[in-house]
Image 1 (cartoon, rainbow, N blue to C red):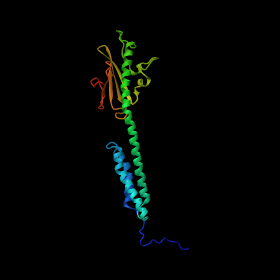
Image 2 (image 1 turned 180 degrees about the vertical axis):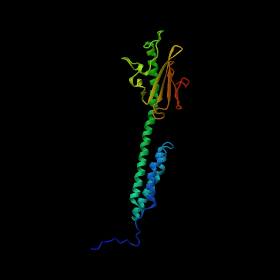
Image 3 (image 1 turned 90 degrees about the vertical axis):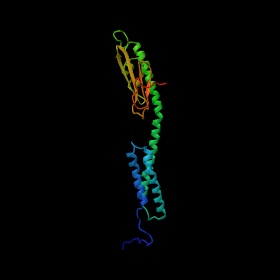
Length: 225
């Protein structure tokens, strides 16, 4: 039995890939590559969309052309480019949503950090007044985070005593200056710009100071209003 063969009409050109399908696939791949390389240079969305949007346009153009001339274009290649480009757009949307959520929490974290230093200031005053670590002359010294959070009646809460609370890292440095007890305390974002935008400082004077330029606040920083 002779093997049947399909006769191709003279007016029906052989199936071939189109430049649109190739462009869609290449742009879909580049949308992820460009976004990954540009994370530290450009916003994720602006970088990835430069490729994904043209990839979607060329992919749909090729598939529309195939519907009119089935033997012209590569439906599978165009579909792959469309899928990659749409996935990149979904990734961009996810990044924007997460980024906005993180940014919305920054003022809350900054406010909590200021509140944490106020708690430390009040706790240090009470700790010294009770004379838990007295000097030979009877004057009480200031305490560390661990000391302020210890005992049956701690002066600060456990989270603050651990040194990390709501995106900020807290430190206390008790000292003696000419025999007089003093201390300094700071609150610094665990990751600047992500868990907080400002750094804060307080000492035995009780004045809370801050910096907004990324540097660690000190006794010479501007006071909070």
